[in-house]
Length: 212
Image (cartoon, rainbow, N blue to C red; front, side):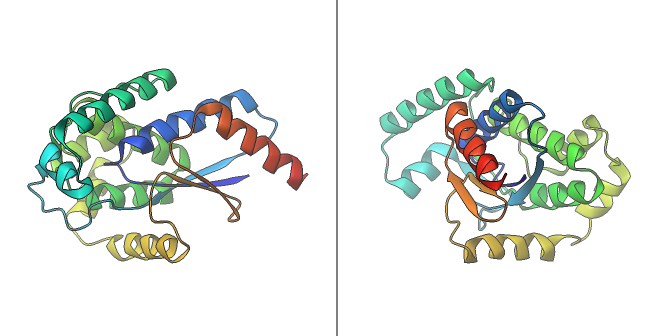
């Protein structure tokens, strides 16, 4: 089973969705071999390098007052805790394009390392409030997951993989993906949003049974 996880590092529901999906896959065990790939999507492609205050950004983007945002954050913390992900304070929103470039590169090296880097990026931003677009943060995380730090620096210092990332972003947008997380299975089936683990598990089992 091929699973494309279309998401953005800046998306909190993508963290919930990934951890939920992984819980579902763990419950399914080895019955169905799975190839999990991470695909790029930018919620804020025009975000400048200095970022923006999160409350101001979200209030303007969604027209939500601060008290509504506070309720949404509380709900996210609860959903995250239920699947093993800890949300901290996220005072700013950052540009994530370089993070996507490194994730793309990691995917050319090793799927497992790409997955570990995705986890590290989500934790850095959503738990620790670090800037996932900052060069020092990105290089440190690459090293922590066992990838080549010098190669990562070379990618960051060049425009390498920029065209490839933009092509993949266009690919998914042209196929109707306009919100994330989007979980695409075998290029045919779509599960949208940060669903609970049992929803993912039921859908995956049905798809696997139909394919068999």
